[in-house]
Length: 178
Image 1 (cartoon, helix red, strand yellow):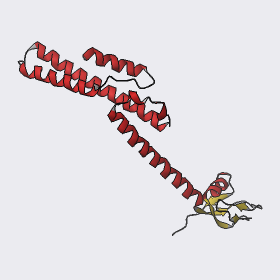
Image 2: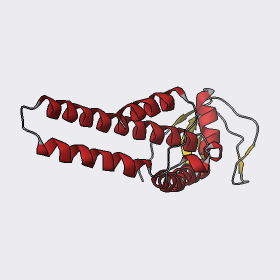
Image 3: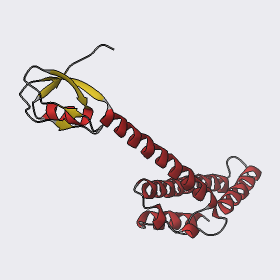
Image 4: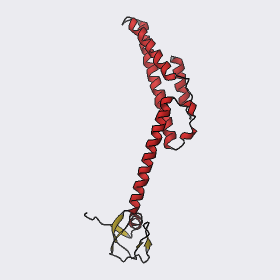
């Protein structure tokens, strides 16, 4: 198990895609660790074989944890970048499949909330002081007409247009107590 796990970790690191694990891989690692624990308990504290088995157990545990973290990282990257359909389903463990389902729902909810916030911001009105004459009317996202404006006018206009005017030096935001 020791050499096999280290090889799997090395191969997974070298591969851009998710590699297929053998069936019941997680259970087999757990069973192997349980067998090591039984052997270790039967040996004397100062037995060199016990020390070697304890070290083997530690290395197997660390390698397994690194392998799982690497696989979760790959799955997360695929999901965040919208490429989860490129993951081969038979290469995912049952736990990884559940993780991917929950992760996709979570990412979808975040994207939905961000999009909703962006739409809300675009509809939000910002109070600005006009710094330069703006002779043209602006049709806002709400289909209302804003302007024309003269220097020193104070106006409430949609965030998107206020930001453009502020960035171009045509207006400055005004703090309004609500």
